[in-house]
Length: 499
Image 1 (cartoon, rainbow, N blue to C red):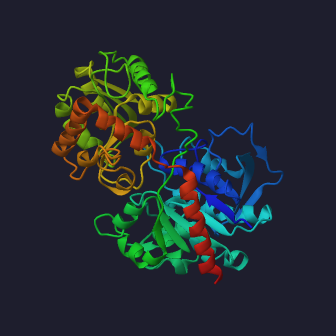
Image 2: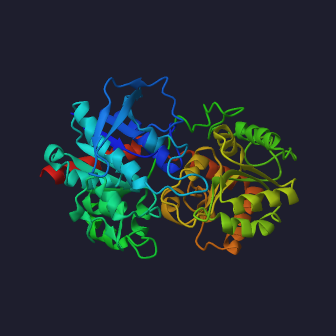
Image 3: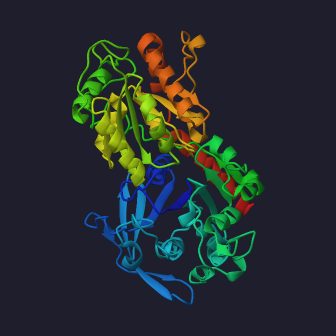
């Protein structure tokens, strides 16, 4: 008999996505449902989510909050996709603002109330729909109050349910004033150091870490890193205290969506057995971004440019190491390669990249914003993919890149260590050549040296490069693998809760 699992999250692609959290909450429920479990997802009905193909529940949902708020009434919509039921909580005062967390140039003061209401709604929807989740799976700080509620005000009805809290990025730790907590009818007794209190403020993630039955994060290496003072962002003592209940599970990718043999965004398809189509994808990408073609012959097909193409698809911020990359670009542009960058983020980094693209129009193209189709074509057409992250809980693009035979250059941190194997020229003839290039020090010098090393192999050792491509494309990052590990955690959590 399968489990009943209710995911509660602030993001879920394709409905609402700010970062990797949205990808996980899209893919994990689908993969878990395919294993025979009853999986449901609750998220806000943001104002850009079209209701025309959603079914509206006949009755509104009343959500009891604290004395300062009374009862909030919400509409609920529903949709079924690939054996997963999605519930959308509609309350325009909270969710019809044109953003998920904060406006582009501002700050939202009531986020604890907005997302705390979502947490409380999880229990009300379970009541109204007459189902009892075995597992409430909460995601990141916006839903970290759910385990606290489960263990306090909701324990009488849902005492047999367990909770799992997944940390997607520990760096996001907003704090709120005490009266926000009281507005959510969370007992004031939880405002203490081993629950929700931190330096006189409400810290929802800290409270969730103490209260959740089991804890996960998105890669084994990140799980180790955030239990140390260097990576714990102040919560390492809590994570170390909960260490016996804490596990890192590597995120997966949608192997159907990211498949070079069938990808509808590509001008032609290819596989590890026949890489000729990758060379055609590269030529088409160069034309699309305006870099043009430059010659023939190379390691990935019968017809290929003599100049390697290095790509980045990333948020443009310091977490992703983009400030270091920008500082290194004058030297990187001396390495006789072409570059394409797709992303958005900090305005200073965006402008710095634009300025470089104007100075080096034959070598660098920068597209500010995001384009799903272009992202796929970049993964398919590039030779090398660069991810110089300061920290990376898991990362997805290094997995997409390997799937498409685009060898990643990554900093040795978090999930990047868990998914990329270092180039090993001594074993290049026995299928152990590695699947990418890793470096440790986040400095312009280390970045330039590692990129230079990779490009040297691309130019002078085409057979080694091809073996690395084939090894990378054979890696299995499908969500079905990770979903089985999550099911084990769910069973572990239930055993702990029910004895």
